[in-house]
Amino acid sequence: MPEFARKPYAAFSRANAVAIALREWRLFGELIDDDPPGTRSPPPPDQKPERMPGLWERVGEYWWTGQDADRPERNWTGRHDENGNEFPAGQDEAFAWSAAFISYVMRVAGAGARFPYAPAHHTYINLARQQSLGRTQWWAVTAEPPDTIPPQPGDLICAGRDWAQDLRFEDLPTGKSFPAHCAIVVATGAGLSVIGGNVDDAVTLTHVPTTADGRLAEAGGLPVDTRYNWFVVLRVLYDD
Image: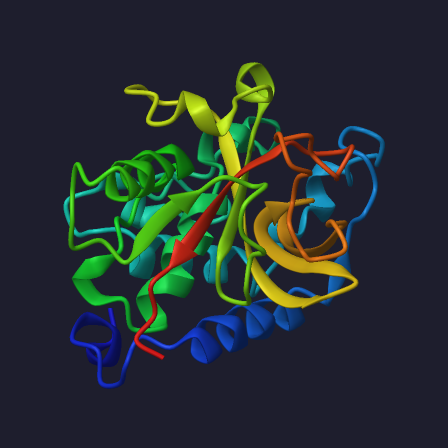
C-alpha cells in the first residue's frame, strides 16, 4: 500500500474520508440507487460495473489496500480470485467487496492501525460494540443505537442482510459472523446521503430518511427507513 496510508502522513480526518468516498463514487459514474432492495433489475453479466475495464482493477485496489497482508482476499479484483483466475459473473456474491471498500476508505484516510480492516462488515460492527461496552480499546470506531445519535459525515451506518436483516442493536456483539452492509455518511440535512461499495456492483450513493433531528430511528428503535433496517451507527473517532 502507499506509504502515506501505511504510516499515515496526516491526521485521520473526517473530511478526507468523505472526500475519498465521493471521489470513488464519481469514478463509478455518480450512480444513485434509492429503490427498495430487490426491485431494480440487475445488469447483464457483461455489463456489471465491477467487471468493466478500469473498474475491476479499482476493486482490486480496494482489496489490496484495505486488507492486511496475510489475507488471501488481498489479491482479489472485481473479476479475479487470489490466484488470478476469472470467476463467473454469477458467482460474484462470493467475492462481495462492500467491506473492502469501507476498509479502503478508512486506510487511505489515515486510520493506520486503529481500524479493524476486514473482508466482511460484521468484524468491525462487533468490535465497535465491544468498544462501546468497554470490552476492548484502541479502535477508532464505536457502536451507538440508531435512535440515540444523529450520524455525522464520516460515520458508518449498517444494516443486516438476508437472514440477519432483523438484527437489533441489542443483539450486538453477536459472537459470530453475519451478513451485513455498511455505508459511509457523506452529507446530512434532509436525511442522509451515504455511499457504499458493491451496491449495484458499483460504488453507489443512497439517500436515507431520518427523523427531524437526524436520527435513523424513532425513540424505541422503530426504523425510519422502510427499505433497510439500519440497526447501528458506527461513530468513527477521527482526529479532526
